[in-house]
Each structure stands twice: as structure tokens, then as C-alpha cells.
Length: 114
Image (tube, rainbow, N blue to C red; front, side):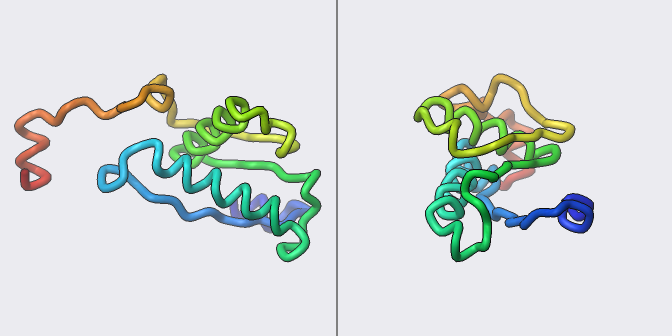
């Protein structure tokens, strides 16, 4: 992301989002989607062209981009972004499931203090 910000002729807005395990998926995806919608709604304030918005993420951030892209498609809002790019995505089918977290085993419970 630093290279994109330094070398690209663009404005970079970095989104913070909730993390698991405290806030299981899709919390982070919903947070990033809300930031995207805010940037679009306030494009003039941010100094961006709302017709030239790209979403980008690397690794876990690419997972977030994949999820946001799915939300956009499900809500017929894909036209709101010009491009989405997932660099080294850490994804599997779990982000499309209602509850992607399997029950914890005894070792995991002990490690988390349950």
C-alpha cells in the first residue's frame, strides 16, 4: 500500500476495521463497506473523483476487498467502484458462509481462556 500511495497518482484512504476473534466475520467486511460508502458520499470532502474509486487489499485486507466486492454485487452497487484489486488474498469459501468460524477445540479454548 505504501508503494501505491507513493508512486500512484491517487489519494489513498486506509480503512480501519474490526478484527476476529472479538468481532467475527463479516464485521470487518461491513466496516470497510461503510467506509467505502462514506468516501463515495463525501468524495468532494476527501478530494476524490467518485467515478474513479478503487478498493485494494493485501492478504487479510484482500479478504476484506473480496467481501466488499460481494456486498456491492449483491446490492447491485458494483458500478460504485472502478476497480477492485486483491493482492495475495487470504480467502476461502468461509466469507460467504453465515458463520465461518467452527467451534473451538479444547486446546483453542484453553489458549483463549475459556
